[in-house]
Length: 474
Image (cartoon, rainbow, N blue to C red; front, side, top):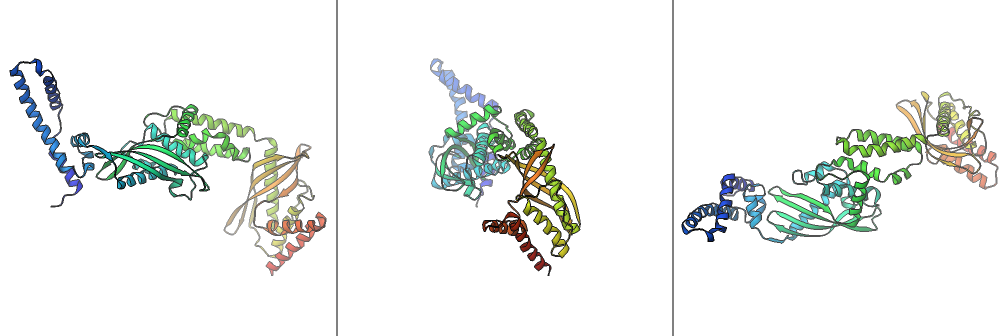
């Protein structure tokens, strides 16, 4: 008859009797009596030996059962009461085999892959019940997040999120393994790497291997953990909320985070969104409080940096692009004289706006059904030597044309302060797919380089773009 692992485990579990408190006290008392046997009378010694013989008979049965049933498969004893402790105590420690080391390496790599993708539910499934929720595992996950975001490591295209098992040695004792794993962490471009070491304890039962503990060993990780706990609070020995790791790591690197933004509006939008996301995380209030404090301070700083000039620049950009797109609805060129100067730096925008009206009038492009003023957000500003400032602005205008709704575009405005208002004295697009990018701007630059004035270059570029529209209308 062929027995499955589960059948053997269930059978052994049923056969091996539970050890009662009374039995354990009997064995302890008997051992104590034997230690003092040299000082006792012979009759007492014979009584003690008879008690010990009874205990030894039971112990012999308990030792023999796992020796027979679990000798070949010690992992079967992992979940069997009594037998688990006996098998582990009696098993010798020895080097893990190559196949076991490969399985441990794959398990560790999979855990770090889950950490890198913030898939903490998947990571927890690789641990023994509850074993992931320790300080050491939390630090390992937080350090992985740190390498991913700020350590120039873990490119998306690399295997296992840029973490590979380079070396592994492990010792086995029954159904437990203790291993030292060297991880190779790749840089974003894949051309450089550094190593990280971790100690891992693995528990194996009939269903497979599960991690009991994992602990990073590098000095860099120790320094990170010290900095992490100084910034927030000591990580609890058990029960820390892993979902807070992405928020905490960003709070730890606020300077780097802020450098990634161009302006106050971007920071305001980002920190408002992050605070809203943190609101949705189920975690103890005490763990969230340090994060709230830092994030709200950054939000208040961003809001303070949104000056009247920025607000006015956003208003001007929203109005400018509203009038620009309105020409596609009416077929009439817009009037921009009250908000924009006509000069060398705005000439091509005015030609482009005229072409919007031409496109509708010629039938080269379908007229818009509706046009409404939208919104704008300054993403970056820079002061210029002539007293003007340049603003990079994202604008969204509410338009409809059949099923199409809305249009978003990035523009660059140069503005001059004066008389309590801002005047637009420069316009450019750095991205886009219209006539401005592909016809007007390159052709005008080419004509000016050939010696034409900006007025001549702009007019000739407009005429060339008009020909293209006429051809499309035909």
